[in-house]
Image 1 (cartoon, rainbow, N blue to C red):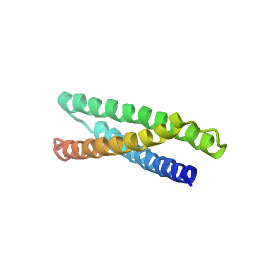
Image 2 (image 1 turned 180 degrees about the horizontal axis):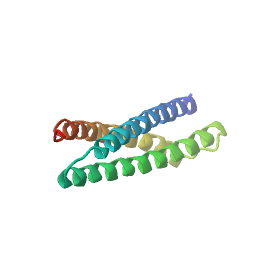
Image 3 (image 1 turned 30 degrees about the vertical axis):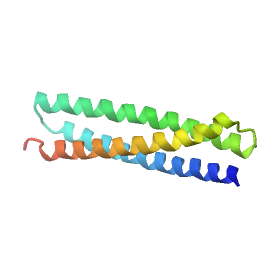
Image 4 (image 1 turned 135 degrees about the vertical axis):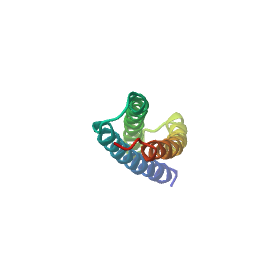
Length: 119
């Protein structure tokens, strides 16, 4: 039963990571579109900071997905150690933290785009 609970938790984390990855892709597309317009240097500088943030999130998502895949395999094969079970809990917390940070970043980005100078 414990094994099933952990597998379900990791699968849920995988789904949330997929959603976060897709959201990040949409944000990068919006950013790319905004930068294509004629904009001032200050706008481009701020846009570059958002781009860096989005790229960092991509890397974090990739690492967490990798961890989740390894945990699922260990759980399925019944070779998960106590440390792996602790890692399941950490994974859930990391995904929650990433989701919260991504929501804040999305709001900040949307505000940035809303205040974009008219061209």
